[in-house]
Image 1 (cartoon, rainbow, N blue to C red):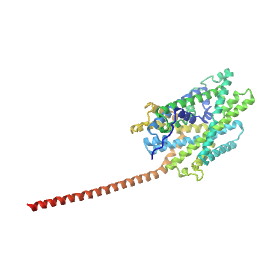
Image 2 (cartoon, one colour):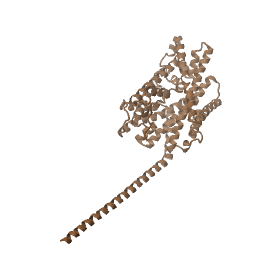
Image 3 (cartoon, helix red, strand yellow):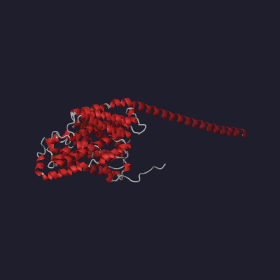
Image 4 (cartoon, helix red, strand yellow):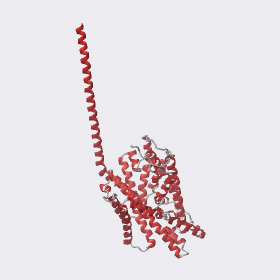
Length: 487
């Protein structure tokens, strides 16, 4: 059967949009004021550095895609480079990182809701988180089409409030130059001792750049398009993030930002503070935009994480319940329910910065593995599907940056991440051997069948050859007897 080919392929514009769209979401609403308590206004520089790190690691993904254009990302690269066990642990760390991110969004949603309802007590906050998670869980169970439509609606609304915030903020800063300059002075009020922890939290806002390294067959001239799209897309995101944070610090003193639960909404109200009605409306627009964006990001994350859990279960590496498909909606409903309920529990007991930093720690493990996998893949003489510039420098830098992110997490964050990571070992040992033994038995059985068939073929061939030899011998003997008789 002739292979069906794509009628059109993704261009540089398409892939750049993929990069930008995959990165920008709820993260900027959540992480916008993280650096204030660590570095003050100097955290603006950290946003640039985090963008550069994201570019380098994304280029490592591009090199891996060139060497191994298969779906599965870090799990597949590590499995090919070092074997099934290493591949599972890397895939496990990525699944954990995405699952922890799901727990971040209910917290962020509740914090922005408190801009409108500031007196929510502890029980009411838990109730809001539960309703938030349940609604998205039901949306995902009903079906991918419904979830996709929900996500489309949520995605369309997420950027407009940020643009509105930037315009209003820049106008306000221009009208209050002295106050703006005062908010940036001193630029480094707390020194640089907390540079690493601030970078870890801010880097979380760039997660999602791996989407640009989809299989090369769907991208036009991938060797040129993918690297350009990565650099261009993440650069656009960095400028967008930098502008948003520049306006944020220009409107609010850094020491006040530390305590803001909804920093962008509060800053918008401050910018329009001279006209109370406009301040209320402006804050409501940005606050509502944050709620929509957070919901959209959690919706997307829930779709992807449930499918990853389903795939691992289908491979025999996760409990079978993760692979159960709803009879009516044809979705992995048990995976959705399990991850939603567990993420809700983490959102109730977890701290926002602890969850984000632990997610980055686990993501950095998969990034480190992806960067390092390039070298054994090359040693195995895996033929690259296309050429990506950077040679050995890019994967070395990617590994070093990943190690740096890991090293800058606090003891609590590292301990939590290592415990979660280590749980993958008994999970693998419990589920994987059965499948591997079965595969080994099948392989040995198949090999035995091949040997038996080969032996039977050789036996038939030897018997046939022996018959020919006997026939020739009889002919020679007959001719010899005739010759002897004639003498």
